[in-house]
Amino acid sequence: MQDKLQELTDRLYNEGLSKGKAEGERLLAEANAKAEALLSEARGQADRIVEEARKNAAELKAKAELDIRSASAQALQATRKDIENLLLGAACKAPAKDLLADAALLKEVITETARHFSPDAPCDLALVLPEKLRGELEGWVSGALARELNGGISAGFSKKMAGGFRIGPADGSWYVDFSDESFSTLIAEYLRPVTRKLLFGE
Image (cartoon, rainbow, N blue to C red; front, top):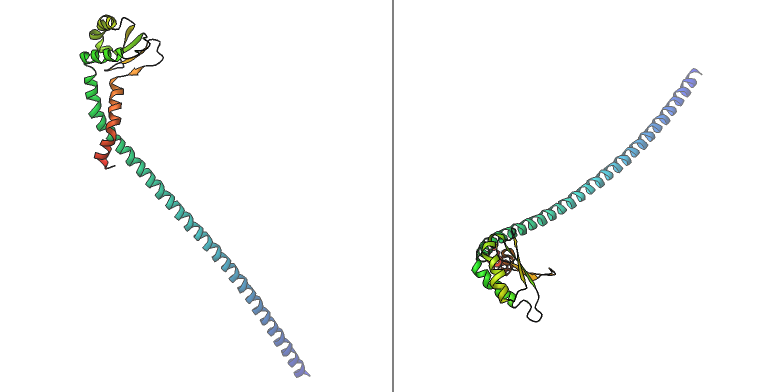
């Protein structure tokens, strides 16, 4: 009886041990499967994050390159414009200023301009002249020029004008600008395409 009891005890123990071992292995397999699933999901998420980061970096790089190209083109264009303006200024401003500060030449140009200013309907004219030429031109305007035009002309003088003149109706409704600034700007615009071609081959 003792042997049967021992045998039964051993059998129950072995069956329990076997069942416990099987249950343990099942639980371990489930835990491993869950861990693998979590690991796989984490890898997938990490891959998506890396891919998104790569995509964002590529877009940022492309935008930066585009911005750099655009800024470089604008800087080059601005530099070309500055060089062009510097050369045109040197070529036009000084000669125009010197030429239009010559009182004798101004007298001729003003006389011809005033004669043809409004041939169909004569009107009173107003001149604006450089302040530095007041001594040479003020008496001439009120004397010889006024006599030639049968009166109807007056002169004002401006410290802002270095050379040339402005002329228009005395009511100030409009005027024609022959100042050294406007004259040099006009000449520069005509020379600009040639200068651009010589400098930059455009």
